[in-house]
Length: 243
Length: 332
Image (cartoon, rainbow over all chains, first blue to last red; front, side, top):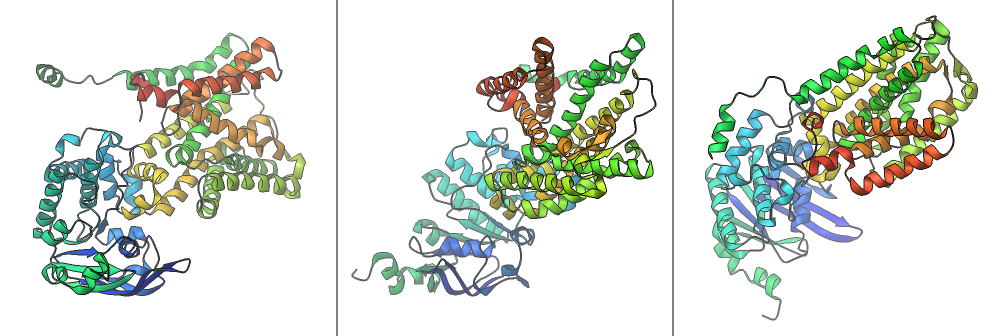
């Protein structure tokens, strides 16, 4: 479904992503893991074209994502969240969600900001995530954890086929974490494909079908969670050579 | 719970203050020129139509500056383009600016689109400087462009109406433009386009990955904001009976648009209206009390400082935050 082919990205001489290649299967949850600075978020940003790649190709179905602007990538059915929540606090909760149903340029000019369909979809998503009580609140009044859940909700608004989640479990409490894991599994059962960057190994090992490990910009291992757990290269990347 | 049940069971009134008060105001404004039947009240007509002009311009500026967050201090370029376009056609072909004002708005819009494609690549201080640079370039070009009279500009014929009725056509033309500009601002504020624009004003990357074509939305907003400013320029040229670069391409006009918007509450529909009314009538009051001196500029500046000290989001914005905004002013 998603194929990364020899992708490289550098910043002022620093090679953040180095010749990375892997593929994501449809209807699975894949986790992209690695120590801090491994290049995971950079690769995420290359997939959604926030950063243009230096070389390599990224395919989604038959589309070259590395040649498309970010808004076109979103309209192909790829939704993404950010490591640090980027909710828009000056908009209402419903407006934050409705933003993701922007559609084509013509609809922008002719439709109301929040259409009845948007409202209905937003209500359904908030119910799915168990946060219906937040519907009438201002975005700025929500806690970080609530924003994190709404970030996931916002990604779901456009009903994407491929969901990219950058550290969905970061900074959330245990109860919220269980809720997020439950929702990720439910989304997979609905046929969604998920690629997540995550540091929480309980989440990674608990929900992932495949794991891709990055270190110093390179892919050092790919495989099933059980195999990755015992991979000596992965242990070395995480724990150091002497352990 | 019982309160909710009682409230929801009552039918909502068909007309409320939100519609009635603005409509009554509009009727009063339509009827105002009738005062000329009772004497020469040209000063009243002048002040009110001057307010129409600036409400049109500040409401239009609010689309890109208030909703979009791009502070353009060169927006009167479109005012000048509209004025010179219609003024030139009037002087050369005798077609009144009343007939060409909308075309002048269209010319300003097309130009706004082209300029936006270049200048909206940056935001913040860089954008502000680029907007001022645009204004300076226009001033220099029109000061030297012989076809449109260079620094002397173009002189236009007076209308043939008696003096007490001579301002009335401009009054109604600017009233129509003002209502249309407010309607456009309201439409943008409540559309998906406006929602996208308000999102872009705070986070372009986030907006882009939600599927919004950020560049196209920004440029379109910039172009839309130019339309009624250009059309108003055409009518204002006819009102003044001359078009000169040193009248239309001065930063004071754009600064007024921005300050009126900020004073009333940028990013709100009624903020530019309230800000314009407060600034213009305060200025006129000071002029009436103390005569034409620099005191009015000093006191208007003082008014701005004091108001923004107590209303940091502008009058409408801050009242709304405190839930004190009268319902008839709450248009989003």
